[in-house]
Image 1: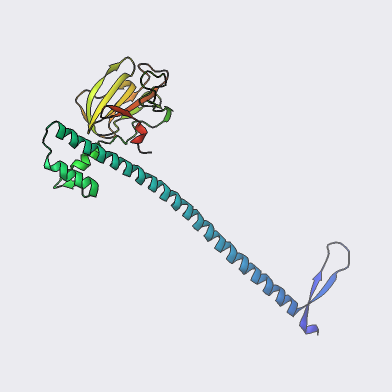
Image 2: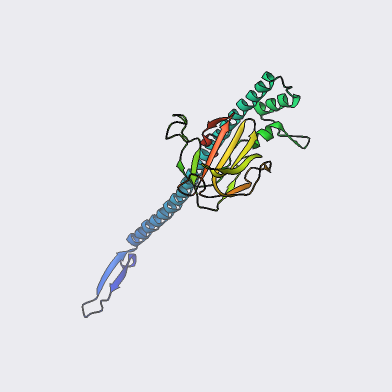
Length: 259
């Protein structure tokens, strides 16, 4: 019986009597087996749970990216539809005026619908030119301090044919799309302003600038600096007034700007 047990002696630091406990080997082995199994279970659980946490985080990030990409694609589709309408209207106007409709216009329209290649023998296609004419690039980055409102007409005190973007003085103002500068001058309301004709009936205006760096007739590309923000004209604080007109009608710039 003695061989089936071992003794554990506890010796206190004071003068109290030592204590001896006899523990069966079977009980000891059972305890160690249970302890080992418990440690293995905890280790496996922690490892598995950690991997699940990582996978969950990756899944959440991927879902967020999918949502963002879906929204970007929706905005691009909207812009393409608007572009198709503009091109169709342009061809109608040409017909009414008795102007010839070039063969490349029909080809470009087909390409726009079919979304085929944008370059033909190294020459920029009609579709590519139209896409570069869409004012989708933010001229400055900042908070919108006043939104677009033309519902009440010009006589309404709340009438505002563009958006105001609050920025500090001296921030580069960039062209929202490629085009030609048709005006770069002073106005009592807009202060130093620039107006760009992007073709296809689309124009943009950038007002209240501190100074201009382009002149009338300049060809500008998307994102090119055309002025520096300021507080000139009828303005109470530094900001950029940004307008978009389509066939001489004011439209909400947020309809075009990519978020």
